[in-house]
Image (tube, rainbow, N blue to C red; front, side, top):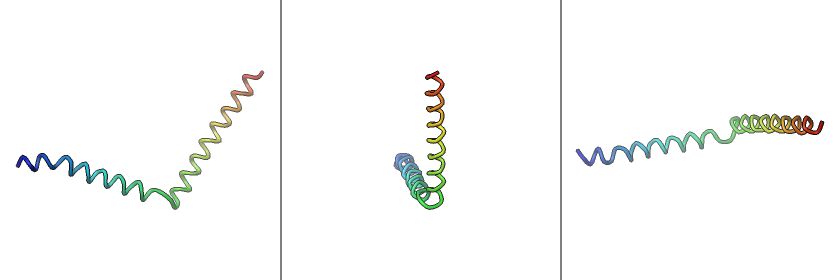
Length: 60
């Protein structure tokens, strides 16, 4: 029974890692890619507008 307790953690970790990789691969591309790109573009636009507002406020 010691071999079972010795092999169980690596097997569980391997299954978890495989599921993680499959989930990551499935979430790439398609509609999800467009959503992610739109979210990144919005975040970059917010950051840029904040940076410009701070630059204009500091120049006065």
